[in-house]
Amino acid sequence: MRAIIFLGGLAMAAGFVLTWLEAPFAGPEVSPLMLLREGMISFGSDTSWQVWVFLGGFLLAALAALVALRGAGAGLLALLAGASPLVVLGDAVIRAEDLRRDLGLPFPVDFGDISRSWALLEDFIRLGFWVYAGGAVLLLVAGMSVVLGPRR
Image 1 (tube, rainbow, N blue to C red):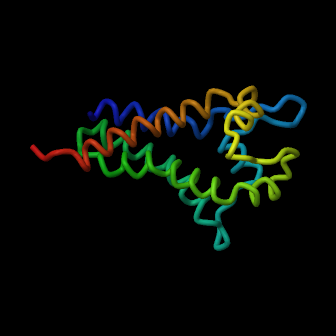
Image 2: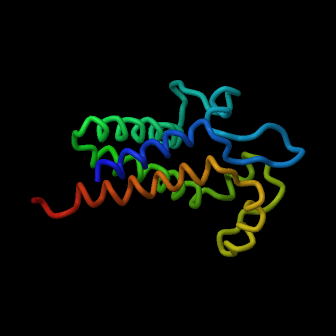
Image 3: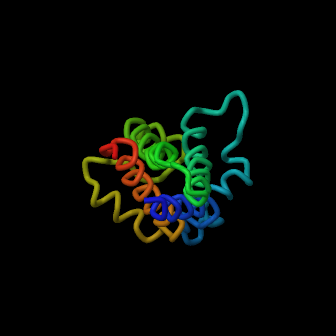
């Protein structure tokens, strides 16, 4: 289980620097590091909890990988890191129309028609997103099995 937590944590943490979205003719490639560097995400007293959870997930993933590498129990760190994208995603789904308006997206966000929404995005999603999502799934499943599994 430590190897799975290490690999999942490494993948999720690596997603911080890899490109997530690349829209043709629409500016730079988007990654969490670019958002932080360009000031689109900032830390301060007015930082929303969603930003803390999103960026904290990367830190927890890296810590889980390091703790698993050392051979110590990293189940709780893995569970928290793996759950962080679900928390942010759940909030985004609840506030979808507000997010669309804030980001200035030229199309409606309709979660009633997931296939149409996916068709709009699938051509722009890059490796960083998939590495992040895959790492999060590994950490969530491994963390749940360690924390919630039967004790030996």
